[in-house]
Amino acid sequence: MRRPSAFKGRLVIVLVVILTAVWVGGLVRFVTQITPETPPAASRKADAIVVLTGGRERLPAGIDLLQQEMADRLFVSGVHSDVDVAEILDLNSQAPTTLACCIDLGHDARHTVGNVRETANWMAAGERTSMILVTANYHMPRSLVLFHRIMPAIEGAVHLDIWWRHPRTLFLLASEYSKYLVSLIWPPA
Image (tube, rainbow, N blue to C red; front, side, top):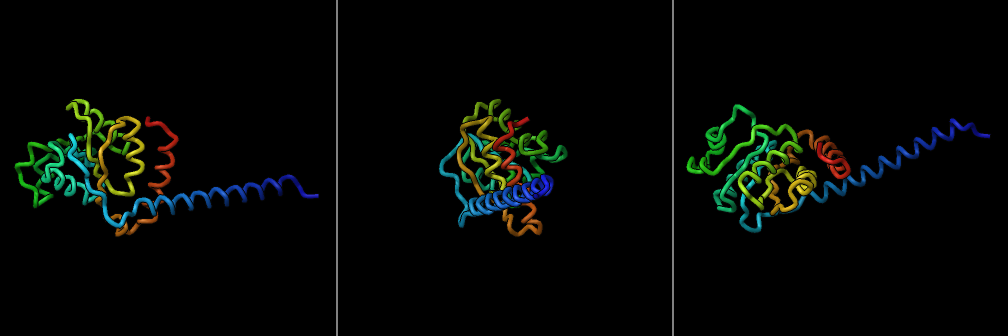
């Protein structure tokens, strides 16, 4: 006769293996969904372009969309408190200084939920109802879940960050996938 503790130990091991397999399978699916061959382009003009800080290529892409007149305003959420619009434009050598009038910075967000709240407040203050969201494609699924909870009307998504060149890509993807899973079940604080 087997001891109950040996059975419980095996059951725990089987459950851990199953959960790990499901998580890895979900991660593979997540990665295949976020790696389009060509990045999606903004399909039509919106009230605003919103850039979530974090990747080097996000800001230039947002400024490029503004130059293409895809929106009249560009909002950059999660900017360090010491950074101003002139510095943003200096970092983007191809951006004309005439764009300074059309760029707003949000200095309060420290994480994605903060980005969503900061953006929602900015959008409401300007009576804006549509936006083009600019972030890395690995960050897009979770960002969209959070934005849709607070702001159901979102236009477009633009892939920007060349995330696969980062040295810690596997950790980055596993971390983002885990956060995405949590965002599906956990309401924003």
